[in-house]
Amino acid sequence: MRIVVTGAAGFVGSHLCDELVARGHEVVGIDGFTRFYGRELKERNVAALRRAAAFTLHERNLLDRPGLAALLAGTDAVCHLAGRPGVRGGAPVLFEAGNVRTTEAVMHSAARAGVRRVLLASSSSVYGPVDGPVREDAPLRPLSPYARSKRRAELVAARLARRHGLELVTLRYFTVYGPRQRPDMAFARFVQAALAGSEMPLLGDGSQRRDFTYARDAAEATALALERGRAGAVYNVSGGRPVELAEALRLLGGQLGRAPRLEARPPDAREPRVTAADLSRARDELGWWPRTPLELGLRRQAEQAAAAAATVA
Image (cartoon, rainbow, N blue to C red; front, side, top):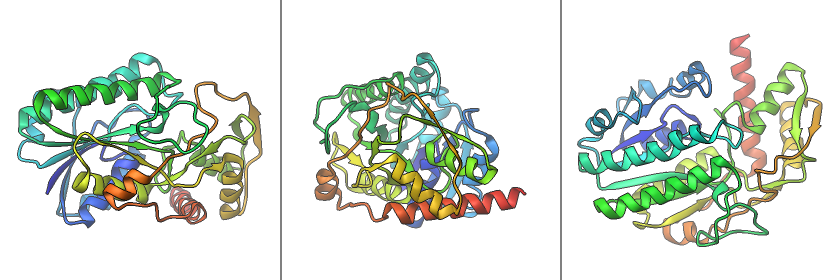
């Protein structure tokens, strides 16, 4: 298949492009190279991909609908991973533009270009507070402007899929980690602080539990959802084993051989204390289950970060 990936130079997007190329697909990447994190980091994410004959990368603003439709022409599917990330990533208007309006543009442009299948990347944050593993049909109580924008993006995509007759598949990712992780995320900040010998602010006491998902596992689930996912379906994508943040940081410090001093700060009320996914739908319909234990995934992230730091030095 010829597949367009938006956000192709980002954290999850670059891993997905790796996976799709490895599976024999032709991949057309689109990335806006926004200033949320440095261009140099994104360029490193796709440095190896640029050497693959089956991959091309275009720098585009997704809100340029005619230009986007031109890039989508002749493709079989689009994976829309671009967006404004992070609970603390900015004002509501930025989330609205980065997550809702871009999704609207992708759906309209896909219809205009004759693309039939669209995969939308959403977030576990749309669930809000949960007590245990949550199913895709659970009530949604998003807490933050980011989470609410991701839910609005889901609704916009579903409405436009019905209007244009598109096959829409939605994935809700749970806290993805691994090599190339965005620098604003907890593990990346921990690694940077450890290597620099500095402090790391920690929101809360570390007892919050997260269903961490290794990036390569998330990429595999996304590729399978694109190939096998049921039109109109939503799938959870997670690591399958919630862990306390403090325990995860302890494991990461062990892999690095050092750890920064943690500076306790008040918890962020916009973040749920627990995230946990029921993965039965992804298992039954996609044939997918996470492969990578947290310890192994953290080792790979630590090794990549240490190698990158040594290269810069």
